[in-house]
Amino acid sequence: MRANRANWARLALIVAGFQAGTVLGGPVALAQAAPASGSAVDAAGAAAQPSSNAMVNLVRLLVAQGTITRENGDKLIAQAVREADEARAAQLAQAAPAAPTSAAPAAQVAQNTAPALAPPPSGTIRVPYVPEGVRAQIREELRSDIMKQAKAEGWASPGQAAPEWTQRIRLFGDMRVRTQSNLFSKFNSDQIPNFQAIVASGPLDLINSQIPFLDTTVNRINNLRLRLRLGAEAKVAEGIKVGVELASGNDASPVTTNANFAGGSFKRGIYLQQAFIDARPKANWKILAGRFENPFWTTEALYDNDLMFDGVASEAKFSQRLFGALDWTVRGGAFPLDFGGQNFPDTATAKQTSPQKWLFAGQLQGDLHLAGRTELTFAAGWNKFLNIVGRPSQPCAIYLGATQCSSDPTAAFFVQKGNSLSFIRRIVLDPSLPSTTVQAQPQLLGLTQRFTVIDLRGQISFPLYGENRVWLGGEYLRNIAFRRSYACRFGLAGQPVNNGGSGGSGNICDADPTKRTPYVAGNVGYSLSAELGRREPWNFGEWRAFADWRYLQSDAVLDAFNNDDFHLGGTNARGFILGAQAGLFHNTNVMLRWYSANEITGEPLAIDVVQLDLTARF
Image 1 (tube, rainbow, N blue to C red):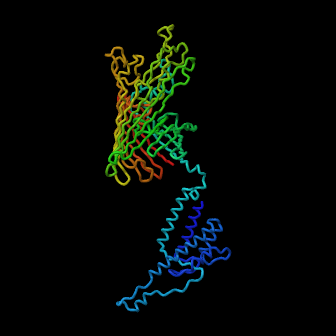
Image 2 (image 1 turned 90 degrees about the horizontal axis):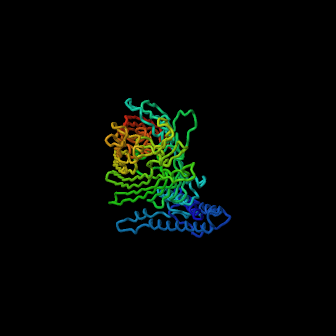
Image 3 (image 1 turned 180 degrees about the vertical axis):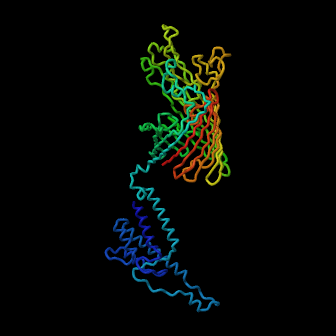
């Protein structure tokens, strides 16, 4: 703290001494003799009598207030007087007349000789004149140095009146209002089951219950929705922070945070969207643990933007590894999807283990910096979904009162539409009843195919004009775990209930291969994109336009996690996306998007989705 006071004292003395070239304690007198330095020290040491020397009085006040000690005050006055003497001597030496030459007349020598000034009044200290520009520079340098020290030590920092913990917390959020219209072709099939509802409802008696079907024919115009997200990040220590985010939603769906308007004025649900610890052991190494945003560079054809990842992820960056122009980034993570029932079967004393469902993923990304602010980015990703395939159960005697079958934990936990699905319960009918008797057969659905998705993505970006740029990109997706023969590995009872073509007996796994209905599922997807303008137009005058062509076969990716707007979610779709976005005010923009998609195989299903968004962030 003593160093801080010395800095303030120094600033006060210098500013007072250079005020418009005036002299402290007396009239202006440039480059003239000053009283002996001892008189100034004596004046500083005089305790009671006021002095005509302003600097002496100023030092006394600083001593009296305890800002500096008396000893330091004496030293300050002595140093100021000494420097004034040195400056005066140097200025007198420069003003001394040169020896006359034969060519120079005596009159000229007399004119070049400066007349001596009268001795200054007692107690006056003369200082050399300093130009205004130099004084201003000195003041700014001193102010900058002292403020840096003040902020570093926390004794003169702006906003220091607030508690210290508030400076370590950052709040953020956004609010979006959307109008969305879902438009269907009049040629669509009306016989497409709503597998999302079937999976969500649990066991469904397909014999005695009504099967839910998708709306594929009745347009939905101007459905109003809102999205609210509110988050906070707190710095815990150097290199460690904690983040949390809450978001709206109609339900706990992993791929949307929209909440519908017109809900009878009932309150809307708020869900935990993020909760994570972000650790940075080194500047180029990051570790995430908890629930957080997608840590990989992917498109919505694979993972929806609203999808959060539960688990642990890590990222390491290596800059300028090839000719000083290529940066590498390595990412990886482990994400549990379902730990299975911890007390399964609930009504049995003999418990069984449930297979845990996981996602293991990794990605290698390269960023090449080319001439003319051109950027080339490419990445290869690997996404392994473990134990998500449905398995057939042991014979399950529902008629004897069983409420659970051995394979129930392998049922799909969430689906949209597109992936191949099969029944997983092998229900035993009551043999005592006539064969014509209709018996209950509550079934569960599981995924037919395994999923290990390879994701190859590339993008080139170059300047358009000003801060606007052009992005051209492409992505190739392939489920290398897909096998067409898997569809019938459990026989007729385990055959897929969807993704069947036309012809044959109606059974994909008919015992006679020549009579089988074609299995039209596929495992390939790709997308092509173009974008220009600003990547995030959050100010008036900023804009963005974009287009995307997308093609996704039924089992190219897991339909539970990809975008829920294109074809209203899921896979087995192809089509385009067009849109534009513009900034209205600071941190406020509007966006218009049009999704148009048709089915690739199977029953006709063409869907157009039009969205108009107004978004404000803070």
